[in-house]
Length: 262
Image (cartoon, rainbow, N blue to C red; front, side, top):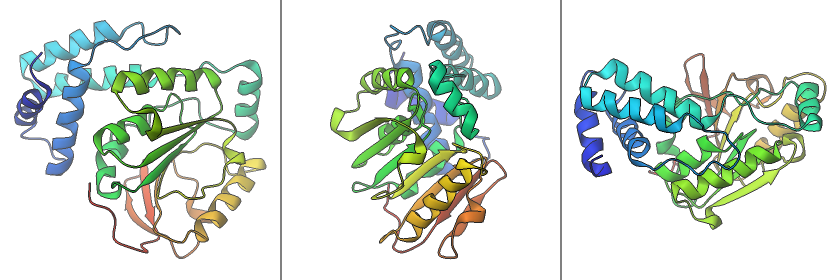
């Protein structure tokens, strides 16, 4: 394939009729070029058996120059790397079922493409229920920032995430991996938080959201939250306002200072 920068420029031309904001189209083209030019990830866990076939299909769509199959084939490749279901141990599965967590669903490209305005050199980001961490790793790759914290119950998914981190060329000191229950890690010292309904808002899950919101209310600076399948709204205080919502992704900010520029 071409140099990633040249390829991104070509992809951007192919997306001339895309109705996304121009900046998001540029980011999508950069992301597509990355996935088109990377070698297959090392796969000792057998999690990405179809990567090569899907990448070949995606590259073929690029060569054909037709926008619809181009995006469709890219999304298939992205979802394959993200993983459809985490390889939880029996105890981890029991805990996920107990609190009503989602089973490693892909959060989609929208959060990745929209996050750039909220991530700067000093940002500390986090993903609650990170799976293999792909979303947080892509945020770090596209918008380098101080550190990202990836919290995930499945030890094997964290192992996979470390593989993807190396594959994407992200330094060790930029990612903190936590194998643990999201209920045990309140959001202290974070500027940007991504979560895909890590637990249901009832029982222990309700307690999670209550504690989560209380910690956010006490945050000294700005916090931006990107929430998929949002369950947080009813727990946040009035200091947080909705800055974006489309029925899938809901974004909140307490607006205490200007967001960093990506």
